[in-house]
Image (tube, rainbow, N blue to C red; front, side, top):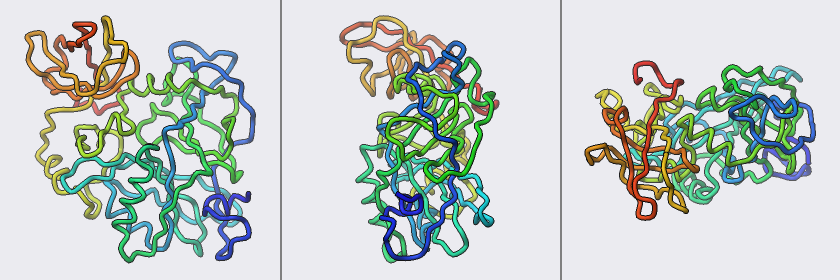
Length: 358
């Protein structure tokens, strides 16, 4: 399938304008399976670990009105790419944002990819979301489309990968990847934080297209993500429950306080300008006997004296996220479970957060 047809969701013989997307990619290379070397040096000489994110899906939004349409729904500016010059390739751009409901609570967290275009082509965006809300997100977009010239459709041709450095150093210190135009993949930095490495959208089923990389275990990706304090998907950001600023949306470059209006803006802007955010999602480490099925979401987190400090949100094994009162995070915390009794909980402040919050 030709790259142009791939990204417009059509067969090569489909009528209409000639779509000539310039995509960021790297040379093809089959990868050997291996573990993500989170705490030590690279295994087998691998510099990167690639994780296939089966729980992430893509929605394609295209059409002459796609940019103003999305701007009225998202918390952030769009990753608008400029037209490619001649046959030269240009970098893909990505941004992070949330869709909110009218009460200002998060519905869907998305990473947006702005596809590169020529001046005679319509703007196109890919929205990466949680697979379980793919249909709901499409309905949400169609509901608000009204008379705008916008097409909303799934994009099953591309699969979502996370690319993290397979070394003791974090992603912000890792050597940059080589980028070459190829037309079968999009490779761009994760817009949330440099600690989350890169995002790769690839057509390939069984391998990642990153030189010197290994396939990583998905559980290692989630464990690393929780240690960095980065929420992702409906378990970490329950639709209609999570508040964007409590979820550290501003820290993850996911909101613009100068853009035009969008659904849910009023409460979010008022909270920001008041400058008081009493609770936040913090990365937490659990110690002690854990329940067989893990700690249940919503379990109360208590101080040493038994006062409420917040609630456990989600996690992977002994690491996770908890929504905690900022003034309580430095003291001893614990949760109580019906199976294992008392489980100690230690909250931390990620070092990539703004200094003023530490």
